[in-house]
Structure formats: structure tokens, C-alpha cells
Image 1 (cartoon, rainbow, N blue to C red):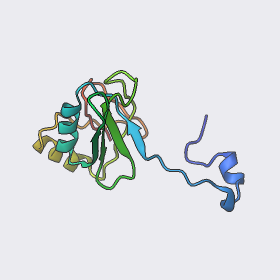
Image 2: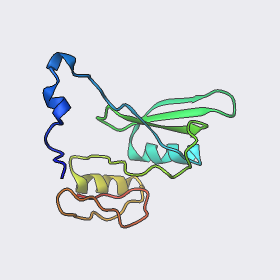
Image 3: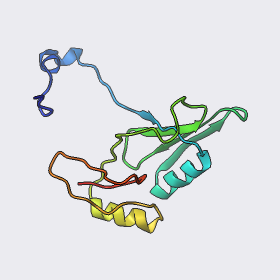
Length: 133
């Protein structure tokens, strides 16, 4: 069994001056309707960083959640992945109930909070947004 809380042997044995500084900065989300996706991220309260089109066959839109160093991008001909195929993405919030209430106030369709055993994340619905603790 792999212990996710302890560093790998490579990480433990690498001198500090040789460790690489890495950050995840962009996640590509395949969408079928760019304007509908923009409306969704606007309702979430995310910052619109970029909306750039180069002709009618290419458009890229970038949003960043408040306090995050990682953004999402989507658009027209940004990825060959099928719209709706992104899975397993996790948005971490400091207070799940407050966040859920605020998102509902903004008109975001969101599931009830479900409480799972520590370390287990479940999404039994096919909703676009769900919250688990």
C-alpha cells in the first residue's frame, strides 16, 4: 500500500538545491458551448483572465478561481478531447456549507453536501458540480 503522506524515496534523497520547482498552472476543459461555459464560470465568481479569438475557428478562454494559482482554459479548437470528458478534478474550499449556499445563491446547480469517510470522495450524481467532504 502506498502512503500518500510520506515523500517518495527520490524526493527524500534529492538535495534541496537539486529539487525542481513545479506548479500546475492550467487545466484544459473540453466544452461544446463556449458562451455557456463562460456563463458558468462567471456565476462561480472566477476571474476572466483571457478571451482571445483568432478568426472564427480558434478561441481560448481562461478563468482562475479566487486564491488559486491554477486556471482552466476552454474554447474552440483548444483540445481534441470530447466535450464533457474532463473527470476527477477537485476544487478545494475552506467552508463547504458556505460555498454551497453562495453558489446556489448565484444560480449554480449544485448537489446537496454529502459526507464521506475521511479520504473518500464520492459523486453519486451526474451533476456538473457536486460537493463532498
